Image (cartoon, rainbow, N blue to C red):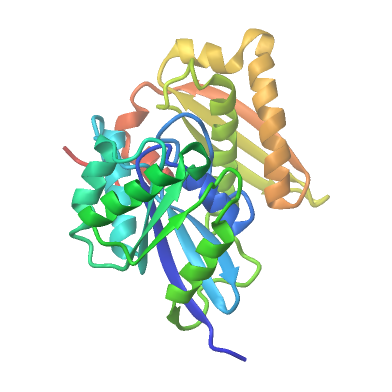
Length: 299
């Protein structure tokens, strides 16, 4: 039997470059929240893929952007921390957007990271081939990448080849996770992420992204089912009304969609109870950051 290998690949990029979609695809299951709203991945989400004898641990970092608020700073610090800790850093660039301001800043900082780096141009189905090749050349001129991949995370093009090549970059050694494990996010936090995604899907225009979901209770019942209680924290009373909706319809719809996916993740029947609370200053509360797996940035 050939030798096993294992390593960590940090996926970094500007918000909405498609990191979460790509992660879910390479892992073959939902481990990261996907939303049209930027900056939805807050902490480092690990997804685990097996390719031959290699175990690849993907870290989907928060999108890197110019931080304005405390939560933004925590997310950006978390993203760069993920890059420094990885065996391979994979920069994902939206081929249509090209080298925008955010990607330019990332490229500047990437030069300081002494790790093997690969470039992944995503959404290639939206761009003509000549401009795609020019973009790849322009980026490699700024920072030399060991490999350049062209993929469409949405359509699945080029993803198998990417996984194969990354497997070849993993170092010989034992696997860090059991073969059947696809994520190291505990079920409680994955369940909270699923509910947060369902809220974004329905209310992405009306609700600011300063909203968080916490799984307050996960209780396994005698019949094998689980009773799950979650609280949705918003910063204003007006946001609470939006989440609940007229006659509680919005909350009901969020709950039904979330319950279905949480049941798939938990592989058991789930009774989900959602509560909405206003907590004006949660964005400055260190406990909330810990709950999200982020370090609290002190001013």
